[in-house]
Image 1 (cartoon, helix red, strand yellow):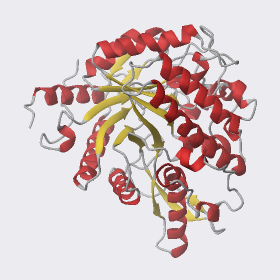
Image 2: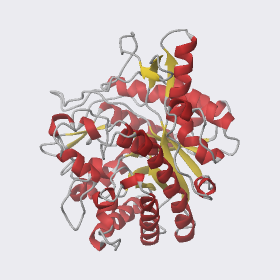
Image 3: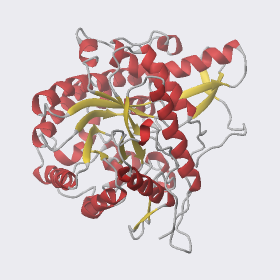
Image 4: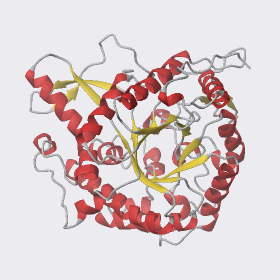
Length: 457
């Protein structure tokens, strides 16, 4: 085992205290595999992967990390890191049939997994929807149909009854912006639709489903925390011009306020429809009150900064990646201070914002097992250190951040990028399914061991 120093985090930092939760995260479709086993239905991602040209190298999630069969060893892996919590998601197609009836075998998988995590003292943060919509619901309109919001509430009702008492915190949705914009706006994610009118309607129904699901969680599992997980982004103008600055503002509104304003303020930002005129969603009486139902926590995912320029038509476009900045394997600019900026901005804009968890933060790099059996990923180690300290800076500025989840526990199916992009702190050999802690995983492990041994202040 290589001798890797622990993460370099000052012992007196707020994030270094045992009260600050540290965890790792995954998602069902990205790791489970077993796509045709034990009554699991087809999902929109199965369909998307089957369409030529959609996913890099023609990859698909049929096997992924084979977590469905390796969950016991994977739970041991999580425990070996010394983390406080594990964030995971449930595969909707695995737990219900086409008529909405429970699938006992699929539900049993999650019961066994949660029981094992609980037995090891690991808190469980469970996301109900991480993008794998059952295909039969997409065939009836998907999230562009209001009926899917009601179907989601029924699914939430079932799972929170079945798993009550086993879950520390429930998140309704993961990154509804991605589901709506990438899935219905530009077609880069399943279901691959390109229609802005469907995009705004899909987001509205996602958020409506979220609000309806919160009521089910409260009724069925009242001791568990309730929240949502949303992605965020920060932007900078390519040129010091009024046009590029306005374009940058619109990008920020579209990425952030489009989702967070309805959740926190009960309204959509009107500048969004300056960007997308005529694309206002149909909103029925009572919808916005349901969407703005108070939550116990807010999950925020953050990865990178984007440089923006005007498209010359009153909108914006991403500037070329030709400026000399540090980037990840995804081509994303590494910009830790953006996490501080977004947290401070939200804290000022939303007076009733609940406590925050950073539910995803991490980076992709082209990692491989070396001759010594180790997996060196020095950029990821410094990435984690810098972003954790950015959280610490936000906390010093008054933002109530309670914890941080690393994306991801292990390399996995990275959606449209297939298996080429590796986000894990654990390397996965997709041929043998052997897991190897990368240097970053060892650094996290060492840091958490040292944190537990320090006297509490």
